[in-house]
Image (cartoon, rainbow, N blue to C red; front, side):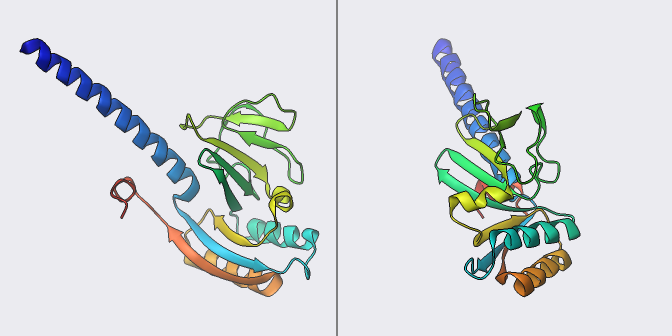
Length: 191
C-alpha cells in the first residue's frame, strides 16, 4: 500500500511539473507580446502613401514618443514573426549570441539558431516549441502591407493619444484597440 501511495505521489509530482512548465512558457510569451502594451488599428491606403512615407512616419512617431511600434504575425500555431521599429522591444530582448539587426535590413533575430545568413542573433526564450523571429519593421512589405493591428510598448494614455493623432493626420484612420496590462492570475483564469 505504501509503494502504491509513493508511486501515486511521484506521478502527481511529475504531472504538476509538466503543468507548471507549460504554464510558465505560455506566460513568458504572453508577457513578451502583450504585457504592459497597447494595441491600435491602422487603416492605411498604400495607393496614396509610398512605402518610404509609411516607414518614415512609423519610425518618426516611435522615436518621438520613445516607444516601439510592432506588428505581430502569427504564421501558424508554432511560428510568431514580430516586425518592430525596435528589435530589442524596449530592452526586453537580450541576445545570447550575435547582434541585433540594423534598421532597413532584411536580417532578423530568433529564439532558436538556424544556419541562415539572414539570422543576426539568438535570444533566449522560454518556449521550446514556438519559434519567435523579430525583424525590423521595413520587412512588413514582404508579408502584405502596413495596415492592421499594431502594438506599442506603452499604456500611457497621453502617449497613445499622441501616436493615434499623429498617425491619423499623416497616414490614415487609427484607433486605439485595447490596452493590455495582464497579470498572471488574469492569464491563468482567462479573465
